[in-house]
Image (cartoon, rainbow over all chains, first blue to last red; front, side, top):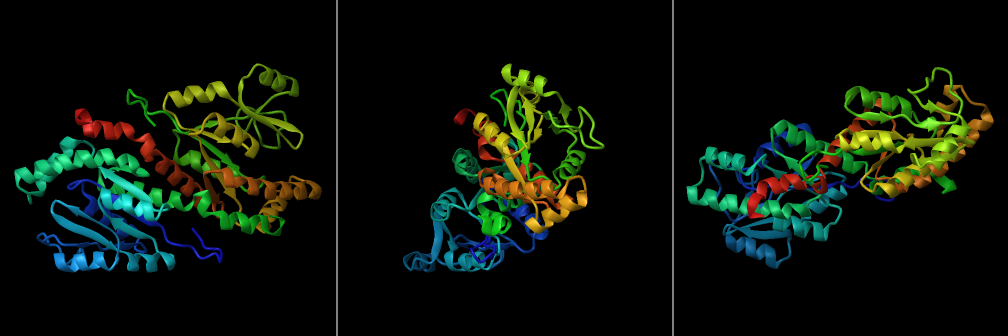
Length: 209
Length: 209
């Protein structure tokens, strides 16, 4: 949307989806087509996986540091998931949105609900697998988790999919290109929402309004 | 959306915009990219313009015939505009939507409001010119109307733009390709709305739901 002065404010986009659905790949595809989107790197207390870099995939911090950020109200939202904290810095996001930059958050369902509460204009998108069987195949193929963890993740996925009714949009991650394409369409459509285009009506009806 | 049996129902898309904004050209562009969309040909009592064909641009009927259709409740909506009737056949649209075909209606603001009332799931898109000056240029360039008619159309355009706040989306017809592209994105986004994807959640959470 634009402010009264005609300055476009950025869109806050929240992307969630069960573990293993392929969110990171879809996000990479998205960011390569829309280099102007700011991807908000979350803070977490979990251990980095092989190949993950601090400040790129996550800002990896200690539990003590995370709890200090909570105490100092530095987070837009945070949640605990499978024993680890995940959270989003409020300051960085606010700055980007004010500058007119669209911001993409990769957060889970509890965090998404908190964002929607604090920012009702945020666009919530939930990425679903084509089926639960396909999600199971993807989790096994990833080969990073024990069978017990995979089963726990599948159960969690079912729970999260039930929560997805609170999202604005559902995108099926059938292929990365189609899923990223649908998300790009959603962003374009959201920018055409009448509530965000009122400045355009004003400019047309002018003084007669 | 899909019915309980998983059969996708068509989307009802309403496109409005002031006279001279370039709606017909945008519609042609749209229909050439999405040949599966059914364009609903309106009924009207106005005289065909040069180049317009019966059954293609409009179904041209007499005032007497139009008033019979009103009396027999054969119309989804109808309105009088600059002394002529314009209306939409209910039967054809209903059949297409049930078959899963998306239907595009080109109607003015009074008709659009009636469609939204009878079918709240309809997606209302309003096409605006980049500015009122540009609309004036386009109306003069078209060279089909007297100056007085143009001035009446411009005044009507301002009124309609004020009404556009009741639409779901506003699309600026800057270039035909960009406007058609935005409308295609809106259609894709609408198909991802959570309310229309509930069948997907059901299929994932399955019996556990």
